[in-house]
Length: 380
Image (tube, rainbow, N blue to C red; front, side, top):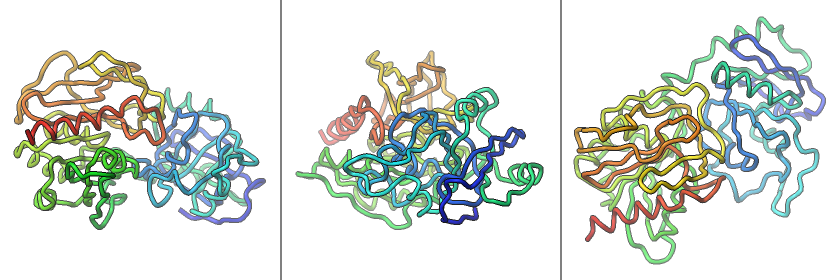
């Protein structure tokens, strides 16, 4: 990715999809070129959390909401230390941000971090195209002297695909760190960072959990060196079919019957550990308004998602696995995609979405309480 950070308001830009469709607009953020997988997010708010979610590594995010940047950028809401999206696509960026917490505009932040974007295009048409044709490779090119479309398309088609991409170690912490419990410490959890968001260990800390966040390369010995009451596997980017190391660590955790909770990528890792396959969705689930049913209670939740892969597990029966019986506990009401798993003979469960609710609704906060209950049960 090559970038410049000069003013961009009137600089031409073009978005080129790998199937040859193009959209012309204006530069937004840094000027230059960038590549990734084109995906769309249906959230009306929460763009700052989206941009800083490590799960979006190597993706170009198209915002379906027409107006983006209205509340600017603050220093409290980032989910990590940097913006992870490869590129950003909006229809109508805010000219002047307005919020009492705002410190700078979104355009300024994108330029500061060298993120190439495009604005002024029909994002509805682009989203419909991705829904019909599926997520695909894309390039954004901006500047006063752009290459011809044939050259740009050839560059896009040279980029690696998301299927087969092993990315979690690229976004995870390199050194272990501890998030202390808020108030009285009740439990210790080892959290394997596959692309964890900052709010996730905070949600556990609120419940009296001291969280030891470990690198994606952590071994089972590293996990048990912190004497955990429970083990957590985080969200993250890439194809779960490449995550053999994480699957091996999870199988060791399951063999020791330690309470286990996984979200998003962690759900896919649990699926693989139990012997299920995974597959790439046509265009994935992204945004903070996805309806999911908890089949154990019948309750419907509105949830925050960011995933392009899913677990291939049967919805209509209990499955026998090397670690006991397993069932699908949650399902997406839009398309019947598996959204949660649990073991019936030991304390382990996972969901495909983001219960930390940053950004997003708080319908799924009970899942952290469910994890606490599992650890309480094992201690008793």
